[in-house]
Length: 365
Length: 121
Image (cartoon, rainbow over all chains, first blue to last red; front, side, top):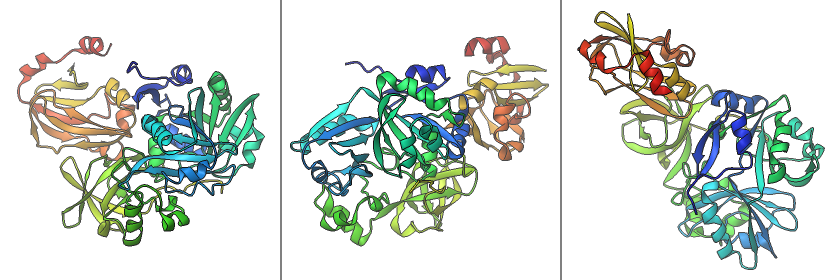
């Protein structure tokens, strides 16, 4: 074993395209290209941007009743997830905290799961230990590419007409230039788009075909972060972790009604109690009124000057045209419109609790 | 008029006992797109190595350190409304402070252009 950063099948292409490579969760990934984070962010909101997300864990689950078995470790209704559909979810621990967030797809003869890069080493043993009779296979020979933005349908559809027929949160296997790929109509930018699983050997060639489209440009982790934050989407490790419950994280929408009522998942006691009575703190959108970005760990105070929470993610939002942030505040202070103070480098800056997302999501429902 | 450079990638152009201070083009390129500049007020005194401001790019905040002792005599107010000027013209229009030097001898600790070019390779 070495600690040398790992590379995705698209590493050489990133370098050739001028990508500025950084270590991310043990992977050498492009943080930005010569266009810059602002330009890449705008590209994704207005046309289409391509992200390499091959560092994320792709997992195949095979066996009988996989969906039902997943319900023992996730609060989502995966037993009733229809074939060809994908659903956002998370593993919870016995304390009701979030172990990781993930996307589960019912691919017919198997389930396809995508987990975070930094947590694949936790998630694979977790699934192996708890999914009795299910064969858990991590895929190491396929890239994962996200094409995101209003032009994504044209970029992907020109090479794969079947992609045009897909709706949000649907998954199919289809041919792209002679290669069998898995396409899922989803992503983590707030825009319409696809995540496409491609065999390693063909990954660079097919990625270049997408990039050959006049509306598609490569984008890095920097833009991915500002896009997901504007879209009000949580980043594991920043906004959610082992200690935060889905209710605190305002993720109750991701737990289906039956599961909320029935329970039967790790931490159900706490989660059902918080559903009924509310959680002590909640994740909210925060809009600083000035220009100073409020970064992670910035203290949040109420108007009277008492500490009520802290920022978990914050940056300049290129589409918003100003700073945007998310953070936890004590529940009584979590109402939209509440005026708060952010303590940035010792100075108090005015801010307001706002509804998430900061930008309208453009999914193809 | 002579220009000096610090290891923290600031430049100062000196005329008599007053000077103009900014960050180098190299530093601006490394920071990426600047979205906010936090400046101190005119009249503030500082010591060499002290923090005299913060530059925020989309992703991260970076401190500006005083390359020598002095006092701020003027602040470039334009940067508040137009922080991206720091990417466009960091060694010209996007100067950050005018300062009064406390000890001109400290200039000897700074680099000339050739020295700075050698530093950044």
